[in-house]
Length: 369
Ligand code: NAD
Image (cartoon, rainbow, N blue to C red; front, side, top):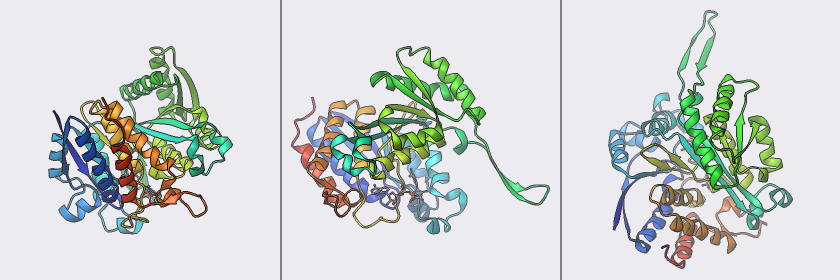
């Protein structure tokens, strides 16, 4: 029997609620397969700051170091609550970016998926969705503006100023490009390279390296797209996209737009891959507006578990079963309130009911071989 240690960082806001549903799925996967998971809970985010004085406590670091994979819930507080935490202890700055840096999780994969049958979830018209949306956004996750040097001060004219640095070296660009091209090879062999080279020198280097890497993947058709136009085209014609590759901040913003065109950020799981360890997290935040109400959509968290099964534990068949189980809940006409607005015809269920239905559907599926 294979044994894996999984660190569970439930995080803040809706994090613990959707983590609970992910755990139900993990427990069933143990029962169905010759595998055992040691699930180790650890404090992370604003809740960790209030409990232990740091959003990424040393004890959590030790648990993550030992783990075979990490599942992380969303972190963060409302704008008002955030004022209670010193700037460097804020969950993103004090926990999320350090987690990414610690394991060098440079490649972030964010599926934006909505089959035709669920086009009613989307704010886009059915004719725009056509046969369905099926995109994977590949976001560089440990470089660029979020990790560059920062300077805050008062200049010679007595004006407050801030300086943040957007930095990439060619190796950082090359490795994310290889990930994106390899993914494109496994899919439709079309890669949209998202950039802003009409303004940013970082994008000029990004494109230069992309072209060098492209010579190793002659079968992949590269389509270059300015990031601002890409934002528009995601609304007007999302089906033209299959694999999209972009730098850190572009990916942060465009992937939230991805959630928007699906109808909810609750449909956005993700995988963050490093050379030795990966972690898995919903792409969205802690949704303070709905926290504690048992109404968050746990798809993003359970989908992140599905990505872990395939990428970290080499269980592609069981991973597909988890995806299919979630789709079957939607196909039966159910969803959480984010996707079951009055008049939509969708039957509204709570977070825990969604998890129960996924488990029920998965239990009914033949075991993966
Ligand atoms: P958010 O992503 O938390 O929420 C945006 C909207 O989407 C809200 O209306 C929310 O209710 C909805 N939503 C998000 N996830 C949902 C789900 N699973 N089911 C149903 N609805 C869902 O963005 P925000 O409100 O701007 O940020 C809240 C906090 O999260 C902030 O502190 C922010 O810094 C943090 N944040 C953390 C991460 C992360 O942990 N990786 C990512 C983004 C934002």
